[in-house]
Length: 503
Image (cartoon, rainbow, N blue to C red; front, side, top):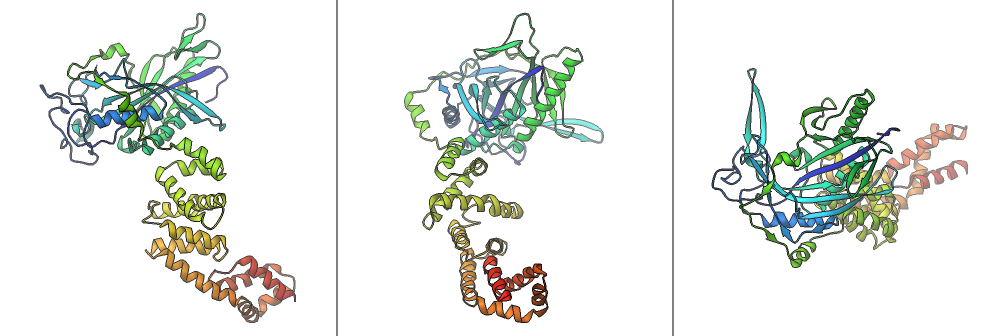
């Protein structure tokens, strides 16, 4: 939201559930989604007296991996802390987290602003903690009650906290999108927000222009100016809602200030059905949580060798891949961004380019592959609700289809219909192509006789054309295309028809 009087200051807290087999401090399985409530639990994740936590090594490695991907400094020691608060979803009365010494700190992530320019967002910290349980709310015969499913309790959770350097709802959405892409590329998390595997919580404040400054990661007042407090938004269930909730909250805060009201620091929830934020509670501070070192987990050393071993899991990330596609393949910004959005799609694309490059220049191969994937293949994938992979659309067959199209053996419509037919009727695409190409070659060898036959069989259309109704040529072309089963080049057919009709 643009406002001439106020600046928008946003920091993001993003929680990501790690792809580990077991929970953060016990051996219970993490795959709880759609499982019977309270079937993946033990004394540790239920918070029973005497149960002791044992840190999950793989979860810590994934936290370090994300820190490396986001250019963070990696601490040489792991310190766990207790974060105290009392709520039904937290059976121990505290969450095992990290406070003063996060595993990863002082990183950054480059995003693209709305004008396409690169914008770097600083990352304050990335730390490891455990997730809480899930409250289930019911209403039976007018009586409201809640039950607790502890299957999610103790699932490894990585928290990413940005510096207050985001300046718009758009930038916040792009940052969240990029984090989701990165954790998926690195197999750190599936980051499915509908399943609660990723959660975003913006912290927002609005300050009068020229009356504040940003110094050493902090928002400071200039002169006697009193900073406006911030609002945290929770319950955001999608990437698009990150942007919508911030836009709404900024407008609400500015409206309050313009009416002369005083803002209070608070936590609000996002109501997606109404498209509004709603008051939940006054915002807690770090002191409210009474952090203390976790006495049941000793300090864990992180060696240089540990970090080096984890760094071997780094892959080419989406922003790096996007830059390479532009340089190596000369693709547009849009094509690049679409192709790198999903790691599996990018791999499929690159392998398809390799196949096509055996019969055409690499840049032409890349452009052809991009056009077909982002156009026809995406459309079929959405229509048929299938994934784009080797099983559903073999790359060698798609490469053959594209090659025949580029050679003008197949028209675009015919090529697309063959692809749809193979998927819809579970037919071998390669066999369909070879059969059609064979029929096309026969038809093309007899194109003159086919056109003569169409002219002789449609005297009225021929006379209409010769009397000045040139649009009739479209009908005659259609007749030829029908007899060649769509395999002839319509432009070539038109040229021959006109020559014969005017001859």
